[in-house]
Length: 60
Image (spheres, one colour):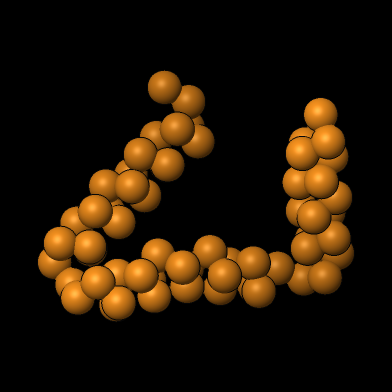
């Protein structure tokens, strides 16, 4: 299993545990808020590069 697959599996497991343990809206805010906060923490040049790579991969 690749490193990214392990991270994704761990994220899903944590998300499911949070979904059961916390009220649904708190778990939803955490699941959506963490990636948004990570994106906003990037500087503008990193955001441009991320958008460019994402568009290029979608165009395959």
